[in-house]
Length: 229
Picture 1: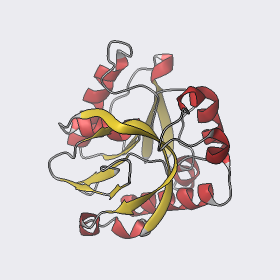
Picture 2: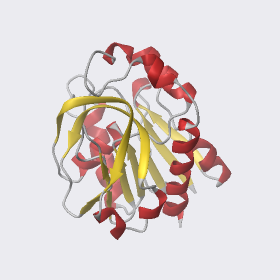
Picture 3: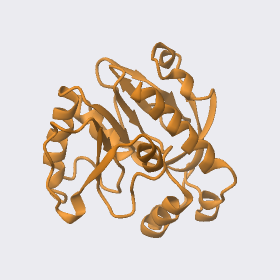
Picture 4: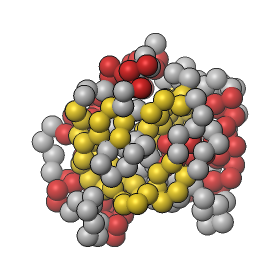
């Protein structure tokens, strides 16, 4: 099987998804939009993973590749691929399914809990998320739920924290894939966003390790295990 991922900036990669995919025997390929890589044919691709990035999905003038990327994601969904989007990737999936993406009332950057929705229990993925879960957030935009989508979770700062569409398309506004090294790279490259705000933590609080990374990476692997079934 082949997993292809869409990478928007050098410092946001697969993180904890990569060791899982390697263990499953996936061929892993990438489109690096920042390096002007071309988009490959979707025919041999089984999984499409759309990563995060500091840009917004409506900034086509500044990032012209966004226009082709949106079409590509729509084609992957129409082609019955498994599609996983994280943060910006989740917003791009929402757009591909016909919904609005816009600025949230508050930026949410830090380790904050999310609460599963009641409707998430309708999906085959519901038991991979525990009832109480602290996850990593780094976003300023949000989205409306596409038609036919089942919401995954909400937080105090953001009502729509993700959705499942037809059991094979998953959009996560929050991060489960991030490793300590990946978060350090985010802070190094986007630390200017760590300003005073009700849902913005300081760099030292973001980077404090403990078992937080281990916990979210395990949940991501549980989610991927369920999707591959």
